[in-house]
Length: 302
Image (cartoon, rainbow, N blue to C red; front, side, top):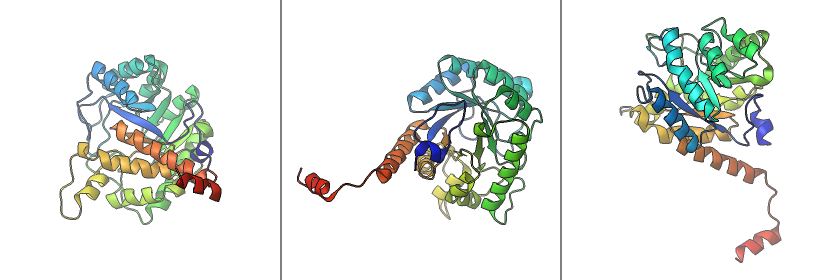
């Protein structure tokens, strides 16, 4: 498989020859994973630069937690959190994505130097989002979303989770296309952990080929999520804390890269950066011409 043609290229973003690594900077006090650690602008920018030094290809900046039960922040507060961090990272040459459901935050982030909009609602939370993205000509992540998770996991019942998520994503992509966003600037995301139980998340990961068949680059965001805690805990144990799920996250990153994901979104970058590079090396070895018998014999005599 040609890596770029197999994973897809996103117009407006660099073309990586492997699964890209998207590092996460949460400028929030209440993220499920690292709430409050990077709430200060200076600390957040420093953290983003550290992620790049560890191997992140792009950095996703968010100012609003989307964990189940989280209360939405108001627009002015989200802008206050996000814009200085986006501007600071972009000024250092970082490829910046903004994680937001608000059109105003997306618009001002793009003006501050962001180059990608990552909207967990796929444009459903704010009707102005798609026109803003279309007018800016920005790449856009369309995630599978069934509504806000205030009070818990909503509408998470599936008869066939792969078919339903694929169909719902396809419908949402069609709406985004109708809104004027170019097809070569759309990324899809199955929304692991959003209105899904652990078994649903694992089933989606096992069938990423079905999601890639939508014809758009695929972002996989599994980092530190509840389903990994359930896997690590086993049938009787308690799930480990979020920050103890990084090795499991890296395992998912390797699997996603092997399955042809365009990018993986993670909190701890170094292990995943190594994982996707190993996956790329294995892929390259698979597609390389096999050694001749004489070459194999010569190798054995060294």
